[in-house]
Image (cartoon, rainbow, N blue to C red; front, side, top):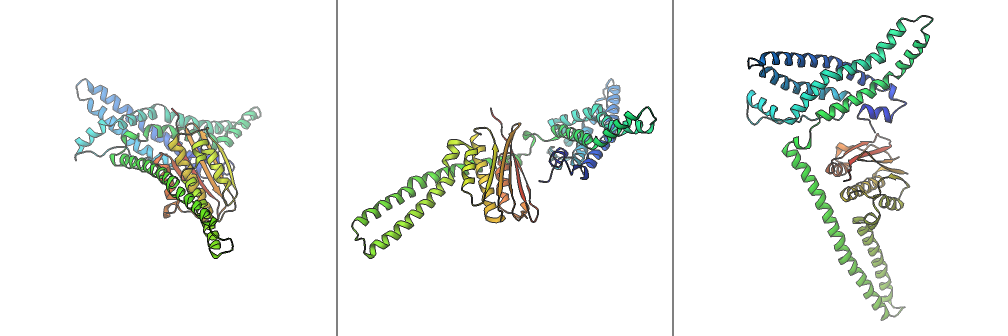
Length: 406
């Protein structure tokens, strides 16, 4: 899977990390952070000094309001800078003014909670973050340069120390860049209540569709079990009674045998369908047992490595079962794989699943393939999904879903 953050790149590809662009991206993020933080400090200091100085004549409120509004510009630039070390774009959480003109724009911004979070981030950036960026860069590069520039016969231990610091600098710089980006995302990412009304309605609609799908699935399973399956059983009994009155060597006996064979096949297919709609093992024993049971009947070998809580919340458990079921079905139908693996972990209120196969690859999520339906299921749970499928394989489906216990 292609890493989307500097931390992921460092954790997933420890050997090839040094030759990737991520250390340079992290260095650019911290270097620009020093310059950007210096500018933010000047803006904050000027706004505070001028605002407090003029407050006594009742016009100092304007510079202070200007400082608050300037923080929105600082936040907008920071959202763009985050793309250096975090490829997931942060949307602009600000609402459009309800009326045209500067006055409506200012009034809208001052009423938004995100504006005040952006102000807090601007103050934090000006007061501390850029200093920390400078300290990390100074420790990684300035300190070794100073020691190496003053070498003599008595300072060789410092030369060794400087070499070690320089060798470790890509990891040091990337570690702090990842931490700084995570902190910035905490301040600048939109909260659910700040999302647009249309987007909230889309999410609510996704949840309603998922709930209605589950309810309809249960209804169909019950109708098949209590209706069609019982009729097939009754038909089998009727054929059995008819055989009692049919001579064994008559043509009718051969026709009865064929009818019973076809009835048995139809009954088995119906039972498999019912089991797929609402597998008893999922209801009785949970997700791990259900996936292991499905993998045992899979047409290609599947390695299942699921280390999850004994039971998950019902909606999450059901949705993830059908997602993994559909992902594995896609492997059997389209990938040409000879083996597959399903791995799952629960860590820090997050469910993480990886579905891998050694097939031909070439899956394009943007081409309207079956992956789109999987992504819709994940989004309905506020999760996210990534697909890595180069031509020739292998294919990796990575899913992350929030899962919190009360």
